[in-house]
Structures are given as C-alpha cells and as structure tokens.
Length: 488
Image (cartoon, rainbow, N blue to C red; front, side, top):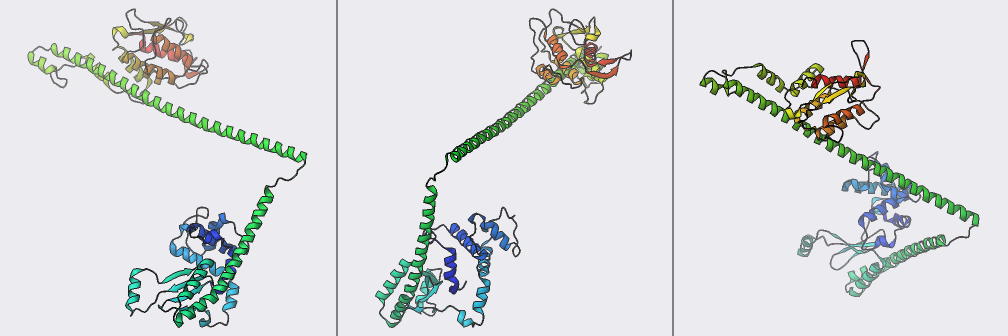
C-alpha cells in the first residue's frame, strides 16, 4: 500500500493502544489486521469471529485449499500463501482510487526517497508517515561495513514507531549533531516528527473518545430501568419457566447418560458371562473326552490280557498294535469318542447321548420314563417319572450327565415364555452346577421343572404323532428325555 493512503487506512483500522504495545500477541495482531482489511474492503465493520471463513471466500478461486470452509483458518496456509493473501487484501482496498492516483504519474514520482543520512553513513527512511527506519551503510569496500554485516542478519533497523520514541530520538539526534550532515538530518527529523506526533496524538485522542463513548454506553446499559409491575411479573414467570425447562433438559440428559451406562454395563456383563460359559462348556467336553479315552484304554488293556501268549500281552497294551483284538465294546467307545458334528441329525444326537448315558457311574445313573399322563409333558409324576437310586448323588454335578443335558438343550428350539425362565438360563445354571438337591427334588428334577417353566404351553413342534395329532413342544421335550434315559 502506498504511504499516501496509510493515514486513511490507519483511521479505518482504528488500531488500539494494546495492539501497539510491546507485549502484543502476534496471532491476535495478524487477525486484527485481517479483520481491518476485510472491513475496509466491504465498507462496513466485520465480525472478528468469521474472518477465517471470509478469507476462505476471498482466496478460494485463486488458491488451492485442501480443507473445507468450516475447518479452514488463515494459519493453515504456508508462509508464502499468507503473505500473498495479505498483499491481495491490501491491493483490494480502494483499488479504483489507487488507480486514479497512479494515473499520469512517472515511476520516479511513486518511488520512496530517503529523508537523509548521518555522518556514519546510515540512511533514514519513513514508512506510512509514522515509522522511522535507518538502513545500514552498504559500502562493502569499507571494513566497518563488513564487520557490521557479520554481526547482524538485517540491514534495516526500526528506530521510531510511537510518539514518545519520536520525541526521544529527535532530541538525541539534535543534541549529538556536530557536523553539517547530522544537523541537516536533525532539522529534517524535527520537521517530520512534528507532523507525525500530531497525527498520532489525534488518533490517540479519537480512540480515547471512542473508548469513553463505549464505556458510557455500557454503564448506561447497567443502570436498571423502571418497568411496570406487570412486565416484571411476566419476566419473572418467563425466567422460572426457562429454569424449569433447563432442569428438565438436564434431567433427561442425565437419564440418557445413565441408560447408556447401564446398557454398556449389561453388555460387558453379558460378554463376560458368555466367555465364562464358553470356557465351562469347553472344559466339560474335554472332561467327557478324557473319560471316554480312559474307558477305551482300560478296555483295550483288558482285551490284551486275554491274549494267548506273552507276546500278545505285551503288544496288546499298545492301541496301534496289530496284535490287539477289536471287540464290539472297543468299536462302540471309538465311535463314541468321535466329535458330534454341528449339523448332525436328531437321531445321531440321540444315539450319541444314549451312548454317553451308558458311561454313567452307578452313583450318577438316572432313569426317566413316561408318566401316567403323556399329555402332561414335562410335569413331574404325571408326564414324567424320574427314578434316582438311593445311593446315587442327588446333585446334578456329573460331567457325563451334564454333557448329555447340554446337547439335549441344543435339540430344543429357542422359545420365550412369560415365566422369567428360558433355555439359555437353564444352560447357564447347568454349566455352573447350580442344580442341587433341595427339600423336594433332586438336581435332575429341578432341571426338568425349570424346563417346564421355560417352554410355553401353546407352542407346538409342527410335527404330528401316529394319530395325526400335532405334538406340543412340552410333550416333544418329555419324549426326547425318555428316549435318552429310559434304558440307563
């Protein structure tokens, strides 16, 4: 910007004294300059909180910007782009007036000229008619210049920018002027300082008047105004209503937060339970596999001992030995040892469970047979008869029996009842060994009673019996139990 327009620009920017202080925030200063430039371009005051969006609109057509308008700030630009943006903003101010001012002028008329020199060779310049700079002597043939250049990284030095600095420097130059060159410079600086200081004091007075006006307006706003009783009551009522609305909004937000926290806690608890149940189920399968493996080893040892020769006896102890004889029981145990496929049919599952049931120890044997009323389904003593030997364990803790009932539950469809009991809960209680004997029932009987609660009465399987009657799910579940445990 030309120094001829500097005064008008300074008045338009209305730069305040905090912005001229030595403790100024550089970021705030640049943003204030941007706000002043944009205000000068639009011929109206500009909101400070929207300067970055305004800069985006100003440069978007001539500069590649990777960020969106909402995320962009002036500080996302690199330094050359910032300088270019500031120059374009300055050039956009009063462009027509600058063009008219330049019309008919020679280049020499638009060039800046120094205001004088001192006896040491320093050259003095003024910019914007407010700031005084001096330029280092540039006679490279002199050793003094070379020494000065080696000790500093600049050639221009800011001498004065405030009224006090102008007064002090003019007084210092005038007092130390001895030769003709220094006296001429002192007279020129004194002449310029009078105008500069007058302009600065006028700007400062204008700023002080504006601050006083704003302060007075703020004080007037703080003075309570007389209002009618009706308006006061209406305003009080409005405040109370807003307060209640805020409290209600806070209550609803708290409820939403607590609900989310509770849902999160339940999800974590459910995940932990599922992990625990999966571990218990895997452990149960491993125990049953070990039991079958132990039975198989024992049976093969017994078979080997029946060999006719000592060689057969020794060789028969090795399962892979060709001397070991294969008996029907060994074949049965090997087949029972096989993994039950996930997509196995119901008959395959029942056969596997019947095989496991044959492995039950005497203290774990249970027998389940149909009761006098088949339509009663899972109702004890009517639909089902459960027989547990006197010496048998009354708690449902046998790994083999638990594994049979685990697979049995997987044969039933997942249904919902309004009793608070479901098949998943039964499976959880089974795996955690919570079916214990009480004053009325044994563990297996408590298992069947929970099963009766978990299956609604109105649910059927969609299959029909030999008389073409639809089979209820309760009856189907009871018949499946008798198929597994009737012959144990």
